[in-house]
Image (cartoon, rainbow, N blue to C red; front, side, top):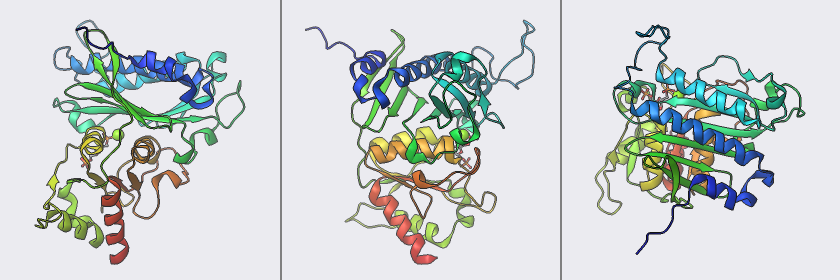
Length: 337
Ligand code: AHM
Ligand code: MG
C-alpha cells in the first residue's frame, strides 16, 4: 500500500495561508527563507567534524579562505535569508552588538523584524552535542519603505507574530508557532525537505523532568532551592523524585521537555543576577511556543511575554515548561521571599 504523501513545510504554508498573520503571503515567504537558511546551516552542522569548519573565526584554511566558526556561519546565513526575503527590514542577533537595519529598498519595504540566536548552545558546538537556532518575528512599528527603527525591536513578547526554533539533533526539526498552535517539521535529508511530523503540539500539564544547571545551586534563591529539593524528594504518589536532565542547549532541553513534560530553569545566579538567557531572542520565542502548547513561561514573577524590553540584549531569569511545575516553583519562590 502506498504510504501517505509527505506534507512539506512549503506545502503546509501554502495550505494554511489563512492561518498566517495578515494572510498576505509576506510572513509565509519570510518563514520559507528562514527554513532554507536552516537547511544550509544543518548541512554545515552535520559536516562540522569533517569539513574542518570548527576553528577560530578569523583563522585561515588551506585555500586561504577565512574560516568561520559555525555560529558566525549560521549568523551570516540567517541574516542573508532575512535580507533576501524582501519581507524583513532588520535583524537583531546574539552575534551582533548593534541591530542590523537593511539599507536596500527591497528590504525596507519589508513588514517584519527578526530577532534571533543563530546558533544557541555554544558550549556544545565543538563537541557534537545538539544545538539550535531560535527566532522571533514581529511586525515593524515604523513605516514601511523606511529604515527600521530601534522601537521595532523592543516590543513585548506578546506582540510576536511568529516564533520558532530549529533543533540540530539526532534529527533536525523546525518547530514554530504563529499563535495558532505549535507545529513541528522534521527534515528528511533524502529529499531535503522539512516534513510535517508533529501537528498541534501540546505539552503535558505535569512533567517528571527538571532541567537546571545544578552546579549553580549554591547561588540560587531559597525558593528555587526548595523547588529543586521538592523535585528530588521521594514520593510515590506524585512519582518523585523527578529525573534531572540538562543538556546545556536551551533548544534541546526545551524541546525534550515540551514533548515529555518538564521544567527548564535558568534562575538568577551571583554571576548572572538577571539570569543568563536573553529576553528577546531566547526567552520570548520559547515562551510564545510554551504558552501555545499549553505551558507557561515566567521570570519568577510575571509572564515572560509581558516584560517590556529596554535593550536588545537584556537578560531575564527563565522558568518554562509544564504549567503546574512552573506554578509550583513560582509559589515556592513567592513563599520564601
Ligand atoms: P549561549 O547563547 O552562549 O549558547 O548560551 C545560552 C545557553 C543555553 O542554550 C543553555 O541552556 C545555557 O546557555 C547553558 O548555560 P550554562 O552552561 O551556564 O548552564
Ligand atoms: Mg544563546
